[in-house]
Amino acid sequence: MTALTIGLLVFPRVQQLDLTGPYEVFASIPGASVRLLWKELDPIVSATGLILIPDTRLAEAPQLDVLCVPGGVGINALLEDEAVLAFLRRQSAGARYVTSVCTGALVLAAAGLLAGKRATTHWASHDFLARLGAIPEQARVVADGTFVSGGGVTAGIDMALTILAELLGRERAEAVQLNLEYAPEPPFSAGRPETAPPAVVAAVRARGQASRAERERIVARLETAGAARG
Image (tube, rainbow, N blue to C red; front, side, top):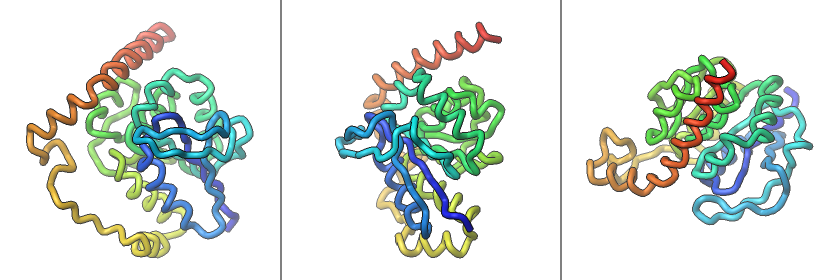
């Protein structure tokens, strides 16, 4: 099998676990070239302060076998960044899989790549999917053809293992899962709004209110632009 080339988009205020979770899985593929992609190679500060260093400029990226778009508050700027959206469109035409983690799905949708496709994203932004032309589905991982989306943050590991199984077979994916000891047993049943205490859900929504309000305005502009083109 020809060595795989895998690229993960990295951008200011990315949610680092959206990126580093899948990266750890993809980097376990023998011989794979795993790239961190951005416009320039300057260090980038994630949403939680971790410094990440891109190694491949978007303009110089080879055709990728797997493209991954993570999420985070930084995606708000990407939703109207034509340079990034055009890059995603170009790459998607030749990629074996185009993937997202968390709100990275909204960026793929803004690029027009999820029109009529089933997809998932973080629970707090799930309602934006339909407004951007996708078909929302509540699941940890959703696959629709070559497009595979993961839910919020930690679901990126599940998504990457799903892709790994498709590329190299279930046994290889299971070996990577075992090596990572990926066997979640969280101390609380608060990982979904349906199971978390109402006060916790309210607190999380309040903490993300400013970013969501900005996202609302951007999506409304995209809807208006789409209606004008239609």
